[in-house]
Amino acid sequence: MLLERTIIQLDIGPLPPDEARQLGQLGFMQWLAGLPGAADYPSAARAAHARAAPLAAGSPALAEFCTLLTASLCGPIAPLPLAMPAQRRRGGAAAKRSLRMPL
View (cartoon, rainbow, N blue to C red):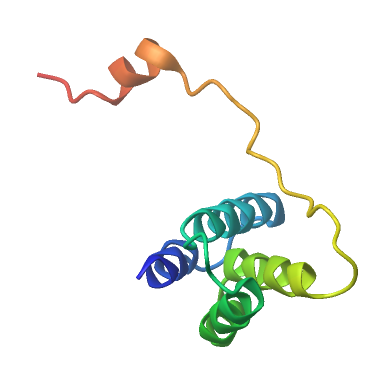
């Protein structure tokens, strides 16, 4: 269930590379956090990759998600390059006021 939701959230079409990387990483972290404690990680990662890979060609965020799944299964155990998106200001009250409809 969580895997399907993650795939739906990531399958949003073309994105700039940096945004796609950030969304793919967030999706991977969301999927990873939703795994049960006793889950067989390699099997779960292969199943997630099998579900997401057919859609990855049309969604760079899903392609990043698949890349992280593959990297987590290959080679020696090593930290993955995951990072939360940088915090940024979104305009605060002034931005909200500018979006209001005039009376």
